[in-house]
Every structure is written in C-alpha cells, then in structure tokens.
Length: 63
Image 1 (cartoon, rainbow, N blue to C red):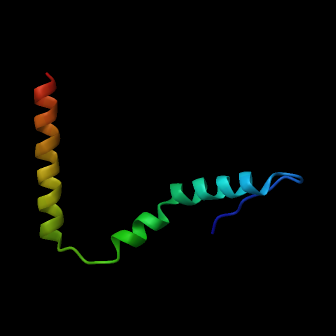
Image 2 (cartoon, one colour):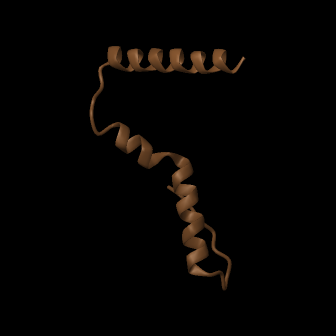
C-alpha cells in the first residue's frame, strides 16, 4: 500500500503527480502486464540469450 503524506494547503494536482510517480516506481503495473500470459521458461531463456548476444555485438562494434 502506498502512503502519500500531503501537506496542508498542497495542490491536489501536485499530490496526484507524486502518487503516480511513486506508484510507477513500485512496478505494480509492469508486473501485472507480465503476468497476463504465461511464457515457457525455455522461451524466456532464448529471449534473454538473444538479447545478451545483441548487447555484446553492440559493445564489440563500439570498440
């Protein structure tokens, strides 16, 4: 649960903006989207491996 202390006389838009930022940092929405469907562990490993290869190629080109 997110607790947002609001000072007396603080603008409601500003408090809402703070809340949205804090909520986004927790990663709740990102986790919810990730859990909407199941991906097999083999697929996850393959994607991670391909990403690692891509990143390594970018680093080698940079040198």
